[in-house]
Image (cartoon, rainbow, N blue to C red; front, side, top):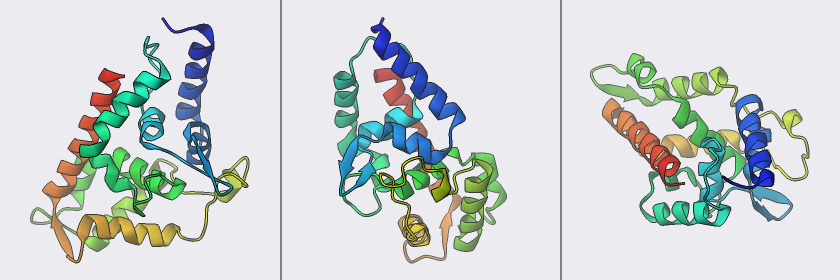
Length: 192
C-alpha cells in the first residue's frame, strides 16, 4: 500500500480525470515546463488515462514501465510535430481516438472504406460528445497552457497521419489503430 501522500494525490488525479475538462486534466498530469508552456511526456500521457489503483510501485517504477513501452508504441503517433513531447492539441487527438467506439466508426464505413470527409465529421462529433473541444477560457492558468489557433492545423496533421494522400482508407485501419491503443493502455495498467 502506498503512503498517505501518494494515495491522496492518486485520489485527486482520479477525481480530476473523471470530473474535469480536458484543459484541467492536461494541466494536472503534464510534467514538462518549457518556454512558458507545459507538455506531457509519454508516461504523463498514460497516467492521465489510467486511474490510480493503489499500486505499491513508485512514480519512478511506473515511468520505467512507460519508457520500456515507448520505442515500439503506437502512441508515438500522437506526437504530431515529432518533438518528443505531447502538446495539449496532440493530447486532444489522443483522447479523441481513444474515445472513438468501433460500432460508431462502422456507421461511417461504406464498402469497408471510410472517406476522409466522413472521418472528419466523426472525429469532430467524438470531440463534441466527450467535451474535448479546447476552450481557452477553461484554462486556469493561461500562461502555462498555450492553446493557439493551430488547432485546425493539428486536425489536418491528424488526417494526414491516418489518411496520407488517400481519399479513403479501409475501416480495418481505424479499428486496428483503436485495438492497438486499447492494448497499450491495458498493458500499462497491468504493469504499473
